[in-house]
Amino acid sequence: MRRNYEAFGQRDWDRAQSLMDPEITWQDPPGLAGGGVHQGKEALRRAWQENFEETWEEFSLEAQEVIRSGDLIFVHAVLSGRSRHEALEISMDVFQVWTFRDGLAVRQEAFLDRNAALEAAGL
Image (spheres, rainbow, N blue to C red):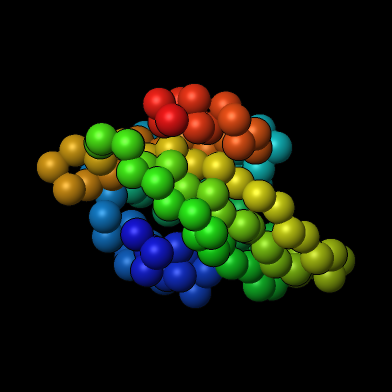
């Protein structure tokens, strides 16, 4: 999973999606770039390209903490980067809950609040 986060930061979309089911449901809060629900790998790839390729000169998503809870995985990650047009630097904590089935991620839900994410993961 950590390699997938690294691939995301390198804009290697194929590798970043390597552990995802083709019909993955990806839900980000409105406060994040591309917030909303994306259904399927292709829709997710388009959202990533629109929101990260066009907006950010550089960015990374680094997993800081990973906790498994049955078929769920809680990840505390730091999203950081520099915008392409205004050179604004950002760094923010993102909390994700992944649902895995048969070795592939079928759902990812992101939160800006750690406690909400831990609760969603049953932790």
